[in-house]
Image 1 (cartoon, rainbow, N blue to C red):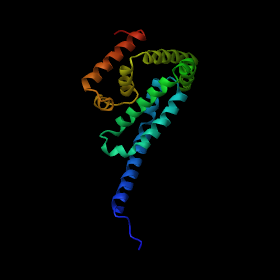
Image 2: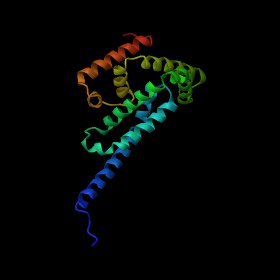
Image 3: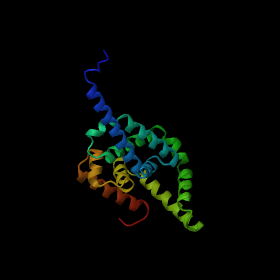
Image 4: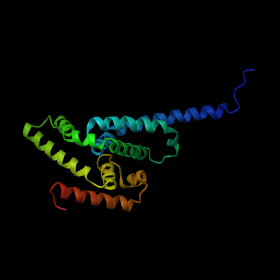
Length: 189
């Protein structure tokens, strides 16, 4: 009388696959958490907002974990979702972030530079603020490639996959971003 549903084996396999995908997602996300947070920090302009976007990124990844089995590079997939989520957050609250940008950035830079003397910390604060301003002024397509490479520690191939761009375009955008940043912070091009 208590017959299992006709597709019970398929259902249990799906549940197992979903659990494996969830475990894989959590593992890769945890390993890349610092890189993702750093990328989001540069993208949105302050650490508090970056943490919020990081949480939203994880939730979006979790809700779409059934796609993981079709993804070739899970880290690149996560970064793509993080970039899109970060861009959305930046668009919706751009003016609010602009006002608190310098204050929050200086706060994070001070925490990073506590091991150095006060003069070194102040110098790092100014350098970091100059760099963040320069990064925020890059064109969005250059900014994405730069942040994925520098903060995400992705290879050019992984960036091409995450952004659905040819690798040559990725390399060109990276060169352009670096040239622009050098000019912005006063270096030689």
